[in-house]
Length: 90
View 1 (cartoon, rainbow, N blue to C red):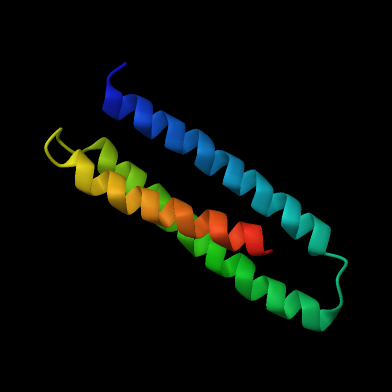
View 2: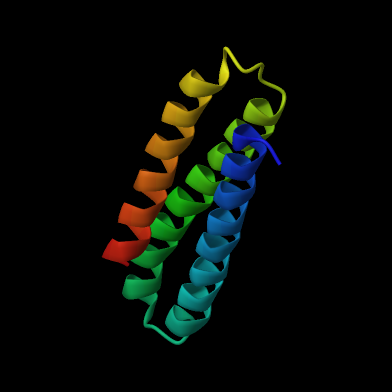
């Protein structure tokens, strides 16, 4: 497995973990009161959009040439940091 494929595989595993964590948070917060749920739903939607963005970036990176991959890695790493930060604040 080349470096690019290993990187993408690692990021996909990490993204799967983020999705599982988000699912746990949704279940945990489902019993919250209405005001709390409204606020949490906004945060959840934000994380879901970032996860969608990460999936698109991973898909694009999978098609990238060796010369293009570094630019893709930076974009992927940025969105993964944002997802992590949003989940940590939940």
